[in-house]
Each structure stands twice: as structure tokens, then as C-alpha cells.
Amino acid sequence: MTTDKTNDFLDKLAKIIAVVFHPLMMPVYGMAIIFSAPTLLGYLPFNVKKLLLLIMLVNNVLLPLSFLPFLFHRNIITSWAIIERRERNIPLIITAILYCVTSFIIFRLPIPLFLKSFIFATAVLSLMVTVINFRWKISLHSVGAGALIGLVLMLSLKMLAQLDLYLISAIIAGGLILSSRLKLNLHNPQQAWVGLFAGFFGLTVFMMLFQKLI
Image 1 (cartoon, helix red, strand yellow):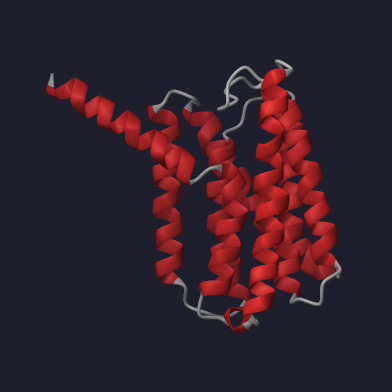
Image 2 (image 1 turned 90 degrees about the vertical axis):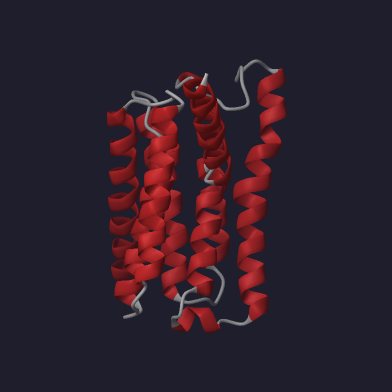
């Protein structure tokens, strides 16, 4: 009986973690980290921060979610969690397009290069994950976790700031996310770990390339 209660509690906790750290929310969390970290970027005007967060919330959270009822009604997806790999294709394509739109909008704004490179990297990473999903199921939650860790590391290196607490928090969050995906049996260890490293290296590499090219 005690074991059953413990398993039920862990399952509920894993589901809460999955919702809180949903892949759509990770870039928003990343932007919040950039704005709150003790670096020069934290001194951007409040109106600029609000505008950027609003753009990301609308384009990359609310709009993708607004498509789900239509996809569900058309039987393109059979569950709101979109567990099956093939069912993820259309939602991922929509999300990737919206990320590219966000990248285009933000690229035209007079904001620091680091912010532009972050948005650009998330757009390219979303395209990369979409392509991968056509052949293999990768953990999108883990990709987001890896990208968040990579962002904190890049922010620390580029801004020459000690962000130990942020980095430790991002790593702990990554551990919780991977554990939750495995606990719910939605991914195997390979899918979870590949997602984590794909998110980490994908974001850092794309950010560095963008900053060198611009």
C-alpha cells in the first residue's frame, strides 16, 4: 500500500514537472534568466523586456497551443500530450515556423546581439528537432532542458559573470525533467540523454555561429 502511494505521488510529481517545464515554455524561461541575471543585459529598459517576453509568449506559447484544438478535432493528434512520434510532426512544423517568425521580428529590433543570437538559436534548434522527429522520437522536454543549461553557460562566458546559482539550478531542473520523462515511461534513457545533449550543443553552437556571422 505504501509503495502504491509513493508511486502515485511520484507519477503526479513527474506530471507537474512535465507541465511546468513544457518545451514551449523553455525559451520564455531562458529570456527571464537573461533579464534577471546580474549582467549588463539585466539593465535593459523594462519596456524592452516586456515587449520581448510578450512576443515570445504570443508567438511561441499561445499560438502553438491555439492550434491544438483544431489538430485534435481533425484527428491529427489523438491526445493533448501528443505522445506518439508521428503525431508530433505537424505541431512541430507549426512551432518551428512560429519560432522563425519570432526570430525575424526580433532580428529587426535594436536590441543586443546576445538576445538575437538566443532567439535565432532556438529557431534553428526547433527546425533541427522537427527533422529528427520524422525518423526518431527525441525527448523535447530534454532538448529544452539542455538548451537552458547551454544558455546559462553562454551567458556566463559572454557576459563574464559568475552565474553559479543559475547554472546549478538549470542542471537540477534538467535532472528533474529527465527523471520525470523516464518515470512516466514516455521516453527511454537514450531518447532523454540525446535530447539533453542535442539541446545543449545545438543552442551553444548556433548562438556562437550567429554571433560570428553578424
